Image (cartoon, rainbow, N blue to C red; front, top):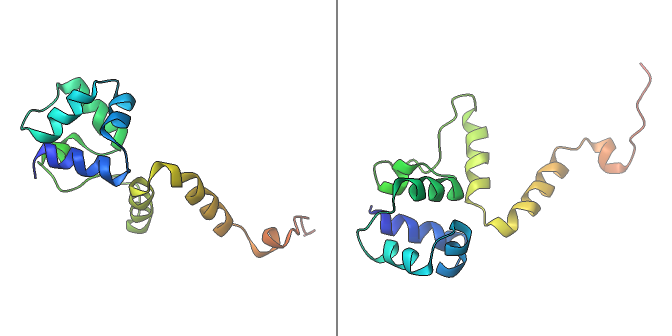
Length: 120
């Protein structure tokens, strides 16, 4: 898959307009349009900034890999899956996802509001 299709897909996944992405990356809207509609690839510093913004690898952006996210060898498969799902979540929904995970991590006593520590 080409850089132009990858960039457009990532932008659309986050429901960003070209203007919004241009502002986030500190480039003109014309640059985003050109990158999405031609075979032109941004300079390396901009490519790195795009990868950091979307939290993906430059190899993924350039079509050299189908692995969207950097692989962390210290995470289990389930942890990597959770992290990938978080990264794929729209930016405006991420706070809700964090709140939900914090709720799921609570003990039944914490949920019930019983936060007193039991004596051993």
